[in-house]
Image (cartoon, rainbow, N blue to C red; front, side, top):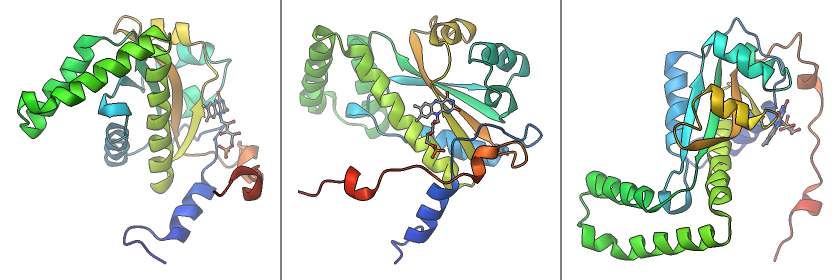
Length: 219
Ligand SMILES: Cc1cc2nc3c(=O)[nH]c(=O)nc-3n(C[C@H](O)[C@H](O)[C@H](O)COP(=O)(O)O)c2cc1C
């Protein structure tokens, strides 16, 4: 059955095709057109209230990538991939971030400011509650994983390989890429490019997932 966009089979085929690639073919680069589409997918990721408390650092510079590999337990994906994205969360979000977002809604939708008062109150309330419970930065970091999911799915749909990566020393990344200076902190990275079928033994292995009956509970 088709939903008018991709077929159910196509969707599952691509999601089965993707796996966390360990070895990329360093000679293959993602085209500008595909890369622009992937950046667009990142931009379109949803976030709580739409606040987008993130910044995406796209790293292609070879020297910087060599340095980052050393901060990533020597994982080869960091240097061998075509593009590396470091998804970073806004640190200690505050009133100015809410006001910035409201300004953006007004700019894009031409909404009269007074119509946004209820949303404004809600966002201030949520931010205050998160701050008081000590979970403000976690809240922002959680949004980053939604962006990661969008990026991984979008890449799979385009036949582009990826490896989501948490295996790095975040504080070193924050210094190397100026993330800390920008008021953000790195949460998760994603290496993207094309698999090296010769070198990557993992690609030949079965996916390990629990049985649906263990994972889904129907109410
Ligand atoms: C948040 C996150 C962090 C991960 N970090 C790493 C990593 O640092 N290095 C790596 O090789 N794989 C990493 N992985 C890949 C997982 O090991 C992999 O997704 C998982 O074993 C499932 O396999 P599959 O993605 O190939 O289906 C990470 C995955 C996620 C979602």
